[in-house]
Length: 386
Image (cartoon, rainbow, N blue to C red; front, side):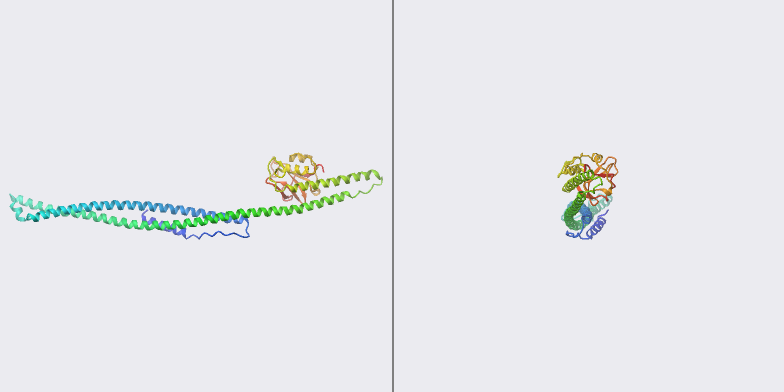
């Protein structure tokens, strides 16, 4: 590619790059979600990558121009050295010719008569005239050749000087354009960093908002569960109607009443224990209430709060439970997915029903409040020791 064509190509590429929309100044986005901010961040990062590629391309183009300028300067130095050599050669030829002319002038010169007198024969005269003419012609041709060579070198020098000037102009233009692209790149980098911080802040805000929502729901569910437990206890405390035969049935009813009241108290303790563990991280095999729990460790802790010891195993708890229908689920009942929450034959799961179609369970990330109907159908449910 010739220098002129390369200049045109570079100029067009840089013109397109610099004609791109200016980088938006970092701004604090309001009333948007973290997902929307993340989309903006992804687009801003793509723009930053594009600017990085443009800066790299501009840098390489500048490197090429600097290299070509160095080559041109070297050629100029070489041509000027040749011009100096030709000039000295021309000066030497001219000095030699001047010396000969001066000598001829001082001695009377070479005349037609002297050539005739100094010739022994006519043939010698003809030869002397011929050689004298050749010497004059040779001097003239030598001087003319040196002049021609010098003129050609001077023409080459002028072309190289013109090329040098163009390359220097292109170098200055490329340095300016590269600096502008680098400034845009720095602005875009600041914009990306600002957006990244906004995304992190928004994610934290949403996390806190979700925790607050869960807390409010948990409080509402706790209140509902306690109300349901009180209602169940009140119903259980009403004496059963006496049978015609009297005593034995009445005594049995009184015993049943006491057991129901105790069950309601145990369920309340279990539900309260479940709420106390909301947000605790899930760790497989863990049983560290307040620090780390897995699903069966969580339910084991909740039942322990009511004085009921159950195994640290979802399938083991399922085997001990008294199965009840969905319509008869009460706060404190266990809900089981045996055979896998996602249909896997190796994965069992257990959660704690707290009423109002909600459960609390260690979901693989942390202990959370969740909707029972929003999950895959459970395999069985029921209490242990209640």
